[in-house]
Image (cartoon, helix red, strand yellow):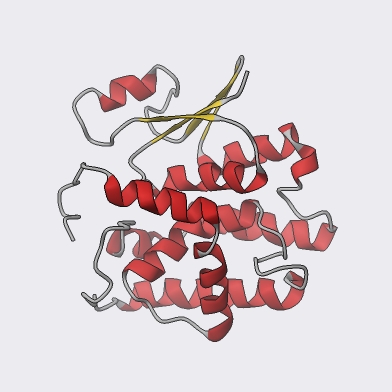
Length: 217
């Protein structure tokens, strides 16, 4: 029986995008269940699966995992043949470090530029200094990973993996808010956005009828 991934709105739920795109690119079969965020009864629905009442949540038979990074770690253990973390020890250590940094950090960017794939990128938003600092750090991370370990493909460590999944929502934010980045980071973004899985998620997100307050454009 295929596992079930509980996710929020595809247009807005950055946390949900991470395990979803990891599983899609890796070819892991799963069923998805969308629970619209901030709708009456949505939290109660999620609480049937996740003790936090938040998405994403993965249910695999008698195993339930919540939090995006924990789900990605579980998938790496559950499907070792998919090589979701790099095999090389140094590369794997860096991949885990930057994934954890993404999970815990960049609060200014998250708050100032929430994920919204329907947003018109021509509407330029001035970035506060703390947001610019987040952007600069992410640009440096991507450039460093590509330079040191990206020789095997267009992603952070060559092949698409968990580290890329963790930063996929940032790719969306940078594109939706037309945030300038360096040449290596831009090429990386284009590689992520060219993925069929990315295009499928974006298409579904744009087609959703839900509009969250403050995210109309």
